[in-house]
Length: 150
Length: 182
Image (cartoon, rainbow over all chains, first blue to last red; front, top):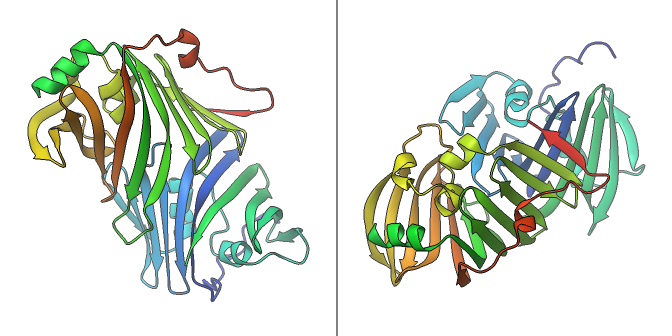
């Protein structure tokens, strides 16, 4: 899988959810550890990235018109697809358009491969994934989901 | 402001319990957390979160260490600039707070006397802060970040100048933890 698949039309899961948790990311030497709160609807996504004391670091929003990133030093960056903006906010390129499918339901097989990503649901809590590992090339991401909001 | 100055002058180190509430703007559920904090001037602090999940922040005077035992993740970065204009700066910073913040009287509210502190460094990562005193005792801090979020920290069981072993402000990465350097 040398090249990235063409950005799939955003077929985010029909589910709407809001989760908060932590994301630790490693790409080669680079590593990030941030708080994440993600509000997902089919037509709109909002990911809020926060630091250890809860202070805001970045806010990423996606809707039909495109994607927008607001940074802690009040810069606003826009782009047609949000995965490239997410790379700036989170520190590595993650499969954000497909991630909604994987966080809402426990898959039949705990480990599966999609688009070159190896996804492993390592912990489940009341019927939903609680700890998910995503690996691809030199990117390794661990998403801990601490709580779900309706 | 005098209370802040006398607090900084008279408090070489301190320890307190804290409860923290972060309220987002877009109706996000407020996030509650709590734990203990301690600091020793200059530049050393220890911020221990117990709930909702354990997390340890240590400023050892040179570096800021953040340890997440659940994910076995340790991140470390230079304290310098981060301390200069971060909320922890006021607690553990050098004496000259005016160097890093514009100070203004914040009036009295909820039984506390407040000081407004605006970081002079434009990309301090937060917009402004308010510090609440009950007499000469630090009782609350309110941090307004650049995303419309407010972090309210309330301190209790405040101890002024307790004996704090230096080891509290040193961080030794546990075996097997993945150290993230920046």
